[in-house]
Length: 95
Length: 504
Image (cartoon, rainbow over all chains, first blue to last red; front, side, top):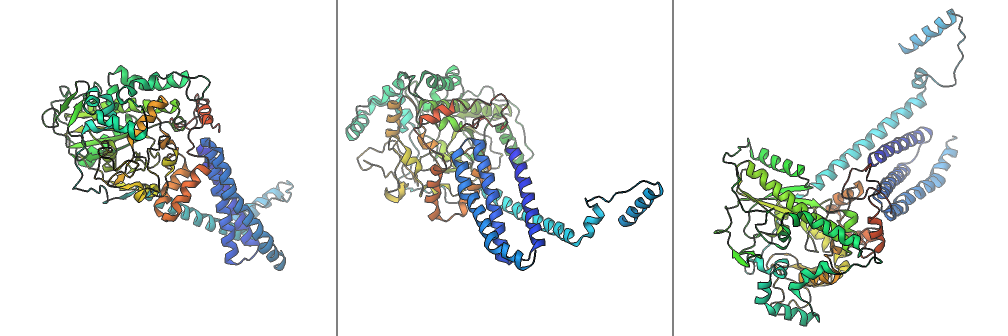
């Protein structure tokens, strides 16, 4: 099961890379926006990895904490960056 | 080339009057011709590649960190106080010997007077397993007692149960050297020899193995035969002069020890003792088969924790146990004394665990006997002598090995709780921040720990229970343990020291 988790993590990582590459083609962004987006992606992936391993070992509280403390801040950060920094750039650059 | 071949194909299709419909899905040639798509793939490749390289580098740093750093700080000894430990003053030896109890009635009297108890040391160890079960109380039922007794059975059958209480020269850990092969196997190099010994340890089921030089500072001296109540000498009675001590670790079950201090937890501790007997005797036989003298040992012959530290297997913890990276204190230590010395010796290493203990104290909080010094005590309980209550009462610290810098606990109170509990405890093992199952996120924490500033250690320690780890005295964990075998038929994790079912 643990190996299966690593495979799923690999798929998620690849999809994240594609998503960020697509974003880089569509719109020109400042370095700090990229730093925020990459941190957000890494935080979410880390949280998913932690939570998955915790559920596998049978400590669901650890899994829940990982989702709250690692994934959730990552998601919030990416939503805020998208809403306030990336979306205006899309409009400005006519995409 | 690609464009030309595509055109050629189109022409061929027209020649054959086959209608070629334009597909909405771009072909490979169109895809690469589109500058936007080319840029997309280029950036995905560069970004993904960079991330993978970064991840690989971080993994490398992590693996390096897990190897530990050679420690020239261990052992720190106060030469004016330190001397080899008399085996008779080790608590499990003392409580197993009627003669020693008769010789030292003042120890009993002082303990009972200061602790306000009416405790019988020597009969305690016999009474412990006779406490009646209560089938309505999880962890204290007939089933839990049966698991505990089954754990001890291999040692009982081998007539070697006493080795847990420091009895030397038992059938498993025999001093008899009549079966040593006359021809001595010669290794190509010291590294080959060390690798061979560690490979054999792996086959016997040890989770870790290290090799230390024999060091008289850690050997009990004099030795003591509890059965015949007789003092033994290394020079006159031991069958050879040991040069090397091979140290192996057997891990205990994570879910089972997590039930501490219930009787259930003693099931894996007892099994660990049996593993000690089996593995040590196997390693001794392996060495004898190669023509070298060897004697296996459980708790007997020498102090296991310092030998394990000298063999590079871990560090000393606040709870007095060895903390081994990856398993923490959830291990049992066995030793094999041999005169084979053509080996590469391991060195003490540090992973920052002892330093972490200075800010943690989860074991002290969990100890039902209050036997482990709390953070508030002098130097956080870390020093050359005990800092616990009544430490200054003359003779009260008779069971401690004074003069070495470490954490000192009051084993008398610990043992007293065992007897009251009707079983050994293990709460300090279960609650330890380093007691973790084999999953990547625990190894990650282990790898970053040496780089963490000291002020974060306390919050890391508090995170452990907040994330659901290390709770003790919890009947739910007993109920959970008895369900952990649910997935055992398939056991997709292929791990045998954690449950096969992920029931929380």
